[in-house]
Image 1 (tube, rainbow, N blue to C red):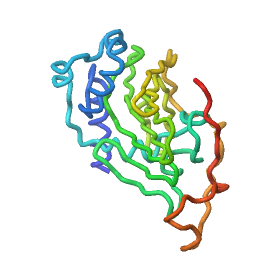
Image 2 (image 1 turned 60 degrees about the horizontal axis):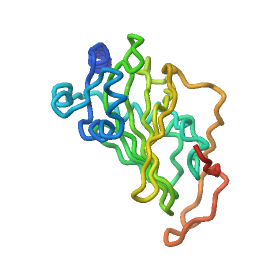
Image 3 (image 1 turned 45 degrees about the vertical axis):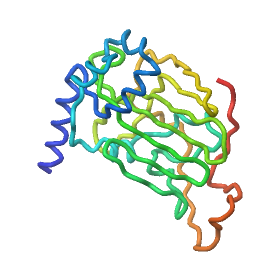
Image 4 (image 1 turned 90 degrees about the horizontal axis):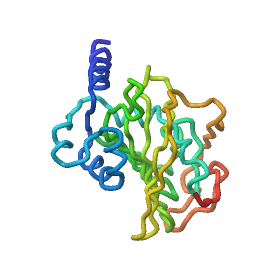
Length: 229
């Protein structure tokens, strides 16, 4: 109980600061792609200011994002959308590999790799409430467009709240050709809508799927055609 209260206090104090960079490398990548946007929002836009704002935190950002962040922002934007209210619920039995990281996590699905990272705590929309700046990179295994979403995620009020990521931009790459797609985000939604699909989980017996050839599409994966943004 005391440990939980301590972690909550750490998060509260971090959120009250004007800016706190958690993942310096990830933030620098973001800075290189959206320098004007950072300047317009009063956030660090050069290496010196980034280093000054860097903060080593013991808060388990990766675990919280894995258990509570909704992947709904990807729906309709990727070839394969894995159903689940949170990223944790998208794991497929004996098919997905989860890798925890210091400030994020990775998921290896049958058709794609997902890498989520906590970049910084900031007040992007200037409403006096802190948001988490988060990146989510999705790489298809069979070729295609690699996309990195930059999200604003509200700080969780408790350990059961499903967090909705508000996308502010997508770094869209096909091979070495990349473009930045800015998205309108006037405010940050504090909670996820309840209208999303229900989680579908199915068990499979060992040996049902081979590992040397690509598997046939499964009913527990909802295939969605990618469309032009």
